[in-house]
Image 1 (cartoon, rainbow, N blue to C red):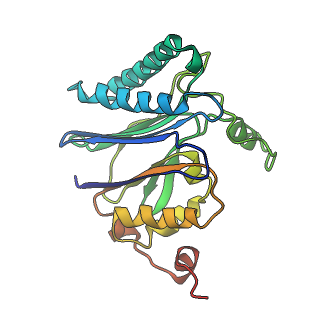
Image 2: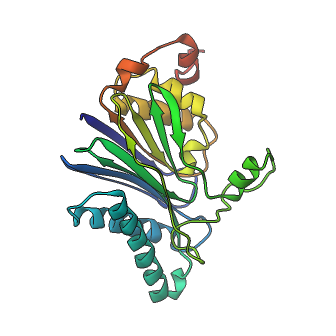
Image 3: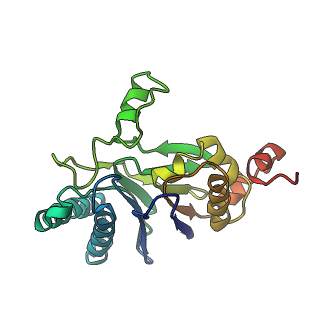
Length: 258
């Protein structure tokens, strides 16, 4: 099955960029991930780097590729991170979010994992099909019916490296279809785009790189303080199912002439 991807990792108005992206793919399998060091805690960039390298390394070294194998690889990331915390008192609380998409290219199926508020979006035929549920207080309040609470969206109840340790959340395995598209991104990216805008951008482009670039352009024109990182992944030919260009879509993304 044909697969394409594009990635971005951009520093916002922060003093440093604690985001990390990663991709590993061969003819049998693929993994795409983002990590975002938890803000305000020393060592977030180290935690993100460590988790990224550990996860990709574990999958490369293992010939098997199943949800169980990827679950053990994420658990390994947690153990490695906790061990690193114990060796350096200055970074004893360093932690990071994780969002990772796993694709079995032979069986043509996918699943994903996340901890924190980095997200995996799944679009099918140009419309949102599934999205991860943030491990945050803001998400819990929204689900309880409270809107516009003013709660800091960065207040997380789960991330890799936090104590007490909690497991990452894994999705069910889904069968891939020609035209599927995925977006794996940090909160600095999705906070500045609505789902409708992501769908609109998908309907306007002919290539995976164009989709990500168009969304990035929209984010850059908004008030952006956080770092933003994202990977866009296309399965097959999404543009054949979703290229429904409209003037309303264009108005959101194309700069005004005036």
